[in-house]
Length: 308
Ligand SMILES: NC(=O)c1ccc[n+]([C@@H]2O[C@H](COP(=O)([O-])OP(=O)(O)OC[C@H]3O[C@@H](n4cnc5c(N)ncnc54)[C@H](OP(=O)(O)O)[C@@H]3O)[C@@H](O)[C@H]2O)c1
Image 1 (cartoon, protein in one colour):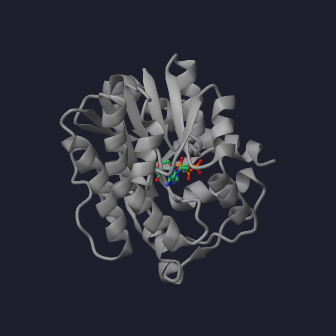
Image 2 (cartoon, rainbow, N blue to C red):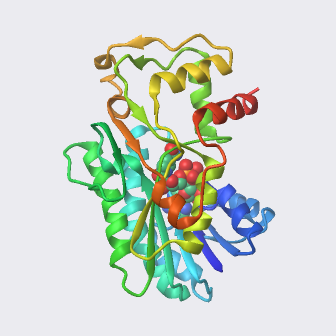
C-alpha cells in the first residue's frame, strides 16, 4: 500500500516508517520540518512538509499525491509545558483528525488508522477485572483529563463515522523503548526523582517496536469499524516497574510516598492513581500480532542497556 503517515518522525512514527518500508509499503511521511523530512527520506520514505492543524496548507501539500491509506500518529507530548502538551495533543486528535480525514479524501485513500491510549477507558481504579475493547471508552469526565479523554473519543468517532473509509482504531499502552521520553524516565529514576505512591496500581506498557509492528498489522488486517488494544502481555504495578528499572540502571529503589504528595503534579497523580489491566487478546486473534517483548521483565534490560 501507499501510506500517508502523519507523525512519521515521532517515537512510534520512525520505527513504523522503517517497518512499513521493510514490509514493501510506500510511505509518504508528513512533518512540519525540513530536517525531519530529510530524516524520513533517509529511512526510505518520501516526505511532505505540512502542519496538520493548518487545513488549507495540508490539503495544498498533499494535492497531487495518491495514497491507499492514512495513519495518524500525531502528538504534542514533546512540549515541555504540560498544559501545552495536553492541549496540543487534544487539538491533534480533534481538528487534526478532521484535517487528516479531509487529506485522506484528497489523496483517494480507502483506509484510515488512528490511535490513542488505553487511559481513554478512564483515569480511575478499574479493580481486578480485565478490560477489553467492549468496555466503554471515552466516557465523559470533568477537568483537564476530561478534555483529553473527550479528544480521544472524538478521534475514534470521526474515524468510524467516515463512511467512505475503512476506519481502524488502536489503543496503545504506555510506550517505552529507545526514545527520549524513556531516557527522561531513566534519568529521573537514576536521580531518585520519581517517587511512587505505595498505593499505585496496575498499568500496561508496550515496547515501541511492538507498537509499530501492531500498527503495520492493523493497517493490513484490521477490520473496519474496530478498535484494538495494543498492550503487552502483563499489566504491572507502577512500583514493580520502577523498582525493576532502578535495579537495572544501578539506582536506589524509588521513594514510596502517600499519593496526595503527587497532587501538585496533577497528571502524574492521575496516572499513578489509575489502575487497569488491559487485554491484548483481540489484537493477537485478529491482527496475527504478538509482542516480541512480552513483559517489562524482557523490556527493561533493553532500555537499561540503551541508556548506558
Ligand atoms: N508516549 C506514549 O506513552 C503514548 C502512549 C500511547 C499512545 N500515544 C500516542 O501515540 C501517538 C504517537 O506518539 P509518539 O510518542 O510517537 O509522538 P512523538 O514522538 O511526540 O511525535 C510526535 C509527532 O507528531 C508530529 N506532529 C506534531 N504536531 C504536528 C503538526 N501540527 N503537524 C504535523 N506533524 C505534527 C511530529 O512531527 P514533526 O515534529 O516532524 O513535525 C512528530 O512526528 C500519539 O497520538 C500519542 O498520543 C503515546
